[in-house]
Length: 149
Image 1 (cartoon, helix red, strand yellow):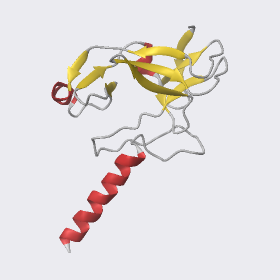
Image 2 (spheres, rainbow, N blue to C red):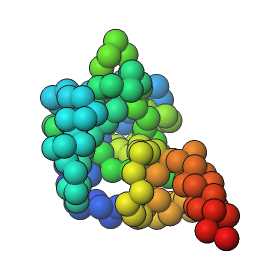
Image 3 (cartoon, rainbow, N blue to C red):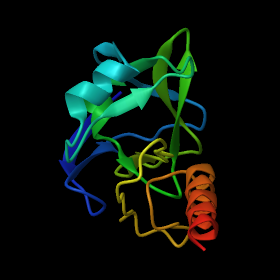
Image 4 (cartoon, helix red, strand yellow):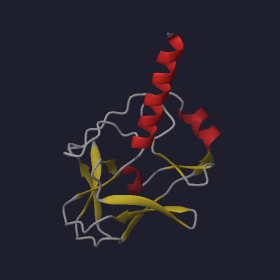
């Protein structure tokens, strides 16, 4: 599949398709070395940027490299990531026109550091964190306030 990395209006560089992609088409693997959550935490604690993806088993982290790692986040994505046989693949959520940037919703979790979103979508939620994680953080903050009174 003809993909190119070039400057992105969302962040730094992104991955763009040079040909149309059909809905549900498998586009690219999110590949890289695998490690445990503990190893990823040790290796990247305090790092300003990572390309980590946690597999559904809750134990395995992919340290992304290659084109798959350069897809930017959007709150209104045209791609999604899904696991097929313990491999993470990027699939098209809809038909994607030649020239479009490929983006997926990172749905970050398990951190409290700021992760502002710059996707520019009218559907932007303002953060790379998932709605579920943000709700959890709001509940945690509310409990702290109650405890402090």
